[in-house]
Length: 423
Image (cartoon, rainbow, N blue to C red):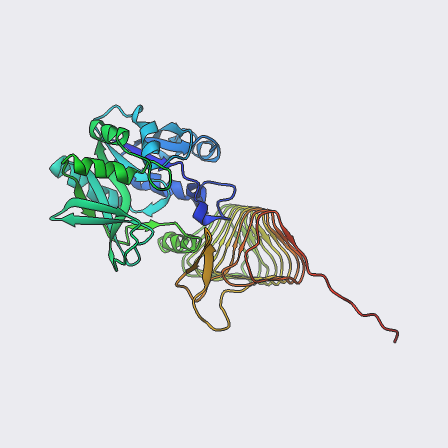
């Protein structure tokens, strides 16, 4: 059986982290998100994969090449325009030469057991498969309604209150002929896209039996909001084991599970509390503290007397001395000046709220820092308040306190009025 990975989306809800890269190419613990999807599928025994990517996406293909490093045989299908998941699958159908195939969204974090459950059910019943996962808040998902293991309805982003329910997990098994005809009959949704969930509804109307496979929340995670990146990073880090390939000073201290890649350096009197991941050529210290659930990207640098807690620091980013970074995601090639503080707790200790696609959302988290796009520069002694997003290539001047989101390519400076008197 072949697998199809739908990876042509842009991830607009994750801006500014996705300003310069597709969502599935967000790096966590040294690998992009899509690598974890590919590995899970491979572990389930499927090695022939078709990757659907956007027309302008050169990053994904360049990173994966032909899949040989992962032990996979990859083909690529191009979605000319972002016209929805059904349209994305349609672009891959011409490359499928088998009757049945697996479909997985490329921007989720999942385990191989989730896919194995779907395959087992298909092998037993030889009918289309949709997977469902329990969710407490369902307004941003497709709610699955089933009876005796059979799909009876799929409600996309319901407006009415459902409470906890099972939602669409984005793992399917289809028969090529059936789904091809359903896609042809699929009409544009209210968003102006051709949705795969609408194609599934076409199958239901035609009387096809569709099995619902339930998986657990431990086996699956959607990364649809900026703070989900931190949770995904935490899940990956919780499974790492200590391996030291880099250079660690005898005067440094490692506690718990810590992975240090080759050519990385941990300087004297630095402390790393695991689980933590330090990628190739990263540098830490001296005298710095890396707290649990932190992932440092390739060639990143944490200077003297810094503290980084529960954060994702991406490739080539430098954080100068005497800085504090808490519960944050920092993009690539950022330069954080000395004495910068990214706060992660409001004075009233209430949940942090963030603006996502124009809507202010309660993150459900008391402690949450900032989210910086690529190439951000922050001057010395600046302070960033909880839940703030700073767009790519923005510049924050010295001593500025940032209380609200900063758009891409904007410069924020603090102008002082000085009084000079004769002594």
